Every structure is written in structure tokens, then in C-alpha cells.
Amino acid sequence: MSKFSSYNFAGQKALIRVDFNVPLDKKTFAITDDNRMRAAVPTIKKILKDGGSVILMSHLGRPKDGPEEKSSLKHLVSHLSELLGGTPVLFANDCIGEQAFLTAGMLRAGEVLLLENLRFYKEEEKGDEAFAEKLSKLGDVYVNDAFGTAHRAHASTAVIAKYFAADKKMFGLLMEGEVASAEKVMHQSEKPFTAIIGGAKVSDKILIIENLLDRATDIIIGGGMAYTFMKAEGGHIGNSLCEEERLQTALDLIAKAEAKGVNIHLPSDSVIADKFDATAQTSAAPSNNIPEGWLGLDIGPNACEQFSNVIKRSKTILWNGPMGVFEMEKFQHGTKAIATAIAAATQAGAFSLVGGGDSVAAVNQFGYTDKVSYVSTGGGAMLEYFEGKVLPGIAAISE
Image (cartoon, rainbow, N blue to C red):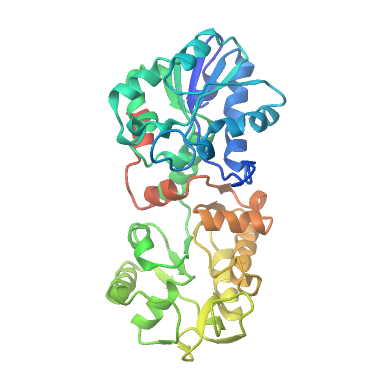
């Protein structure tokens, strides 16, 4: 049993770092996507059920000069109460001010307190020790359940843990699930292991591809970044996206993969358009022979079949990045085909992990969230983990 699940929070004030960095409507400040809040609910409920109380801290947005209305966590209070089944949520207008300490001090079993935005203090992002120590005095136990910020060495995610004894700091259920799923893919993967890497730029994904060359049997490359590989191999890509300064990098990655016996799969054909627009004229072409004036905006039908066959015979699957501009209906078929193939492989017994904002948005949009093994909440954190980096928020608890 996990440390969190076996811990009895009765009579304890649990200080939880959550990731409530949710999008708000600019006019009404209504929450437009509450997935990150929902993800934290099981952790909160377990503590309350034990007879503990909960103090929640998070950041919201990127406030530059202290408090601002659009970044106040007060906009989340009523919805959070709903998610917790009507449990009242108290709010402190600061995170280390007098009201925060008075309210936290009087908190009784079963009660929830939400602190104001941590980033209203510059000390948060600077990893300031005095700020972290002040925060630590609000609770008896520290729980980090914010995987989305685990790659930041901020006061509330990494520094604060040093002020709690080893048995008084732990991951929450969400963080445990994230870490366990990532570990399973990187260190306990069954073969064949297929990594599907998409998105616009090779430069964004070089480190993850290099790190996966020692683990994956197959790497599927789609999205805009595929055309840099196509051009590097001498193909004609028309007006498709291309990082000219990364052509040699693409060739180096192909050579490294070949040397290690890893299969790199590039899309054989593309859905092409005469402009980057939802109303563009479309056609199909080999990905290495796209006419001038046209650009590839999705993988084509042959590539969909080719990639799906690779995915369906896989035992471990990692998906990071879409195959095309799936936000536009004309160019979403490739990304949807990948999601469908991953769901089929998962049903057949494969372990599948979807990470990265656009991939997560795609599985949500196409209704496959419950048909893959795990959907990560942490875009940047997940990417850095798969690049082989040590995440400060994880290290602080694991040390």
C-alpha cells in the first residue's frame, strides 16, 4: 500500500500543493476546464474521511506584480465546494498573511481552506527558503499532489519539503499515479514499446527522442516536425513547416536509431492544404513529394494505417504530441486514428500513457480518456521526466 493510502490523517492538518492552474473566462472568471481540480479530489476526500483537515495551496496564471483580480483563487471556491460534494471551502485572502494563519489555526476536522495565489509573491518562483518555511507552519503534514509543477524548483513544490520530517511528507494520490505510470513506461516497459512523438518542432522533442532510443523499439514521428525529417532525407515538402537549422539533427537521430536497432516511422503520405486555414483546399500527397505552395497539415490515410499497425502490436505505448492540426476538422483524422489505435491496443492488454497538453486535449476531444491506461495532467513535467531530467518536486519527497 502507498505511503499516502496507509497514512491516517485523523487530527492532522494536511498542507497540500495542488495544481489548480485552470483556465478562466476573461469576463466572468468562470472555470472553463476543471480537469486539474477534479484530479485532486480523491486526495482531498481521503484526508477528510480520515478526520483530518485540508489546507490547499496553488498558483493560477502568471501574475507579474503581485495580486490581480484575474489570477485570484477566490474564483475557484464555489466550484471546489461542489466537487467536494457540498463541503464548505474557506478562503484566505493571502497565503502567508495573518488571515491565513488564523483560519488555518482554527481549522477543524473535515474542513477545507484554500489559500490565495502563491505567485502573488515573487518568493514562490524564486524558491525562497524563508517563504517556504512560513508556508510550512500552516500544516502538520505536507502532501504534494501537483505533478504539473513538479519540474519547477519553487518554494511550495520543492523547498518546503525540507521543513517536514520524512514521515510527514508524501505524494498525494494523483502524484503517485503520475510517478508510477511514468516509471512503468521508462523503467518497466514491456516490448514492443512504441513512442508516438508529434507536434510542431523537432527542437522541442530532441531530448525526449534521444532518451527513448535506449528504451523504445519503435518511434513514430508525426505532426509538423515530421517534415524536417523528410527534408533532411532529401524530400520535397513544399511550404510545410521545417526547421532548417535542425536538418542535421534529424539525420543524426535517424542514424542513432539505426545503430541501436530502433525503428523510426515517418508518415508515408500527408493531407496537404493550399493554406493554413480551416477552409483551405485539401489534397493528398507523399510526405516527401509535396508540391510548392502546399503544406502538410495531417498524416495521410496510408500513414494512419501504417502507424496503427505498429501501435496495435505494442505492449507499451507513450503518446506525446498530435499528428496534425487536429483543432481544425479537416486535419484531425490522423490524430483521431492514433487515439483509436491506442485504445484498441490498450483493450488488448497494452499499457498506454498519454502526456502533453495537445495529446491530452485530443483524447478528451475524441472521447478516449477512459480507453487508455493513464492520461497525465503534467505537460511540461511529463516531458522533462521523459527527457531523463530529475524533477525537483519528486526529488524533494523521495530524498
